[in-house]
Image (cartoon, rainbow, N blue to C red; front, side, top):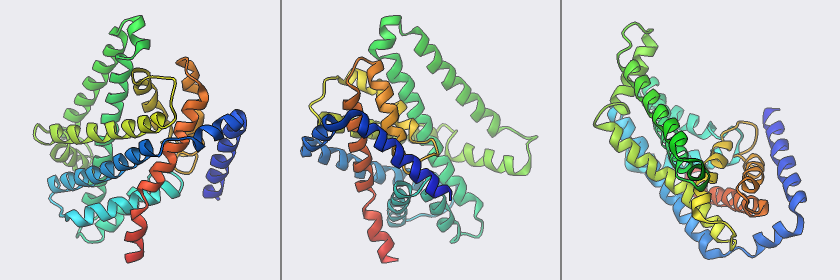
Length: 291
């Protein structure tokens, strides 16, 4: 029933957006430059490969084995599930469950997946705040406010990490998670590697969206796009649709006019980005068929 509701929300929102912008939107999509779309697809494959490495790196710090082949196959399969089923995280949950079946304890497998995804969300959040602070919007009002928000977020994240690592009075499961976070994320050896990998993946997401915009002969520019794209990508995490369809396009329709850009441009790029993301998960079909 929930799947049907989320599918209905996606279909209705996409239909409303397409109806709102009509033939102009369809013409933009038909005229899209395939070269830029291929570049976006290549970035999609690169992101999945690097994300699989990040998962393997995280699991290694938790002393649980994952081979390169297993990490890549499981990540492609998880991406396929996330792009075709509601919620956007079911593929990751299944990835953790399948890995946990091979271990004596299931907990570390779920910790590896959760910490790996947390690393990515931290990087995307910092990238979004940094992009906003340096965008023309912030610069016209002075970058101080954005930089203060960024500094506060970094400080809070660091304090949480320190508290979790030293939470002697926490419950047993909390101590277990604190130790896992300390070993795989919040320590001086793992954190720089995690952030570099996650910032690269996050930049790849933004870069893929920019490629979709470039395919449309757009009116805007990169300095504005990098402030607009992260919020659109964050909107996809709202668990009310299938792989963000409808919500992503609606977010673009709202944000692009706020920056003085044509709404149809953002909506068309969001549709192309969704299609490219789906294609990037296609190798997961091969993994599924082989099983």
